[in-house]
Length: 81
Image 1 (spheres, rainbow, N blue to C red):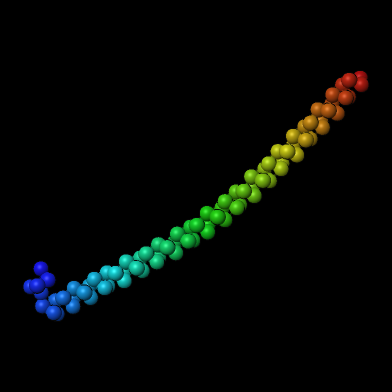
Image 2 (image 1 turned 90 degrees about the horizontal axis):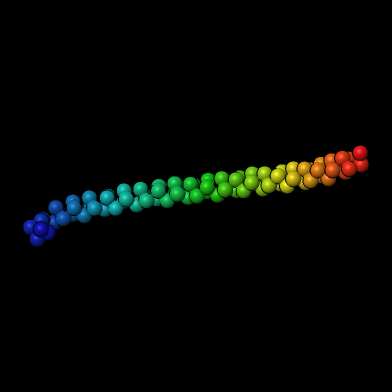
């Protein structure tokens, strides 16, 4: 195939391939940037979710403690009557 091509045709082929490689490199760089951004967003979302879960756990523990206290004081009031 290449033996039948002239030097000008080979140069044109090499130029097309060079442009294709450059386009693929640009595309890859854009995809890498998008992936980096998505990873950062995921980390932020995970951090926010972790914070929300921590607050929910704290609230649940507080409510459990209030309920225990209420039950204890309620039981004492019932028994003292």
